[in-house]
Image (cartoon, rainbow, N blue to C red; front, side, top):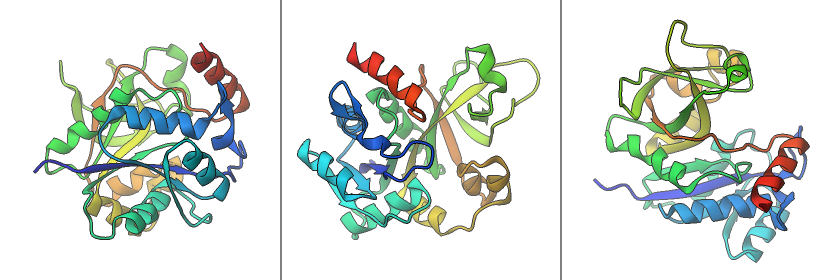
Amino acid sequence: MTPNPIVVIPARLAATRFPDKPLAEIAGVPMIVHVLRRAEEAGVGPVVVAAGDAAIAEVVRAAGGEAVMTDPGHLSGSDRIAEAVATLDPDGTYDVVVNLQGDLPTIEPGAVKACLSPLEDQDVDIATIAAEITVETELDDPNVVKAVAGFGPGERIARALYFTRGRAPSGDGKLYHHIGLYAYRRQALERFVALPPGVLEGRERLEQLRALEAGMRIDVALVDTVPLGVDTPADLELARALLGA
């Protein structure tokens, strides 16, 4: 059955590390609008911003995009997108929901498409993406999350066995930088947000481990580059340099 995806970008202003981040201007355009444009360029389905604040919805609509208001109290992006999809599509027309973080203004449209490819296997509940780590310092950087998956020679999709902030797996071979872009089957998203937090999720501070602990299947597609995630004002300046050029 051909999937019918919708791309949802969760965004809120009250981030502890970088307040008002979605509205930060890059080359004269709010960051959330850059992400919206990259998602539209992917051409996989309609794109909507799940806004936790009216100011975000206003800039999205002013740029010609669609936004839906969600509870500002949500603790995670997955909770926010689940509410948005339930509001927009109560009849379940869209059977795949792509969760694209609102702080990835340099995401390549091809990466959004790649995230859908593991769902061609009907046994996969959630799909995500990763790229080979090529910078030595990232191997032991806890801010670089590693996707542990057994990619055979020439394989571009593999089943995720674990995600960790540590260096894993051990031994010789490539390590993979997990990129926080997910494509959920609709039922999988509904199940996921209803689950209690997992033990390993709390230990690693990685939400996707909740799904693995509950026996859900996550497959990973390889992409060639890691998009810049804007987590700090320094990241913002780098994004301005990249996109301004």
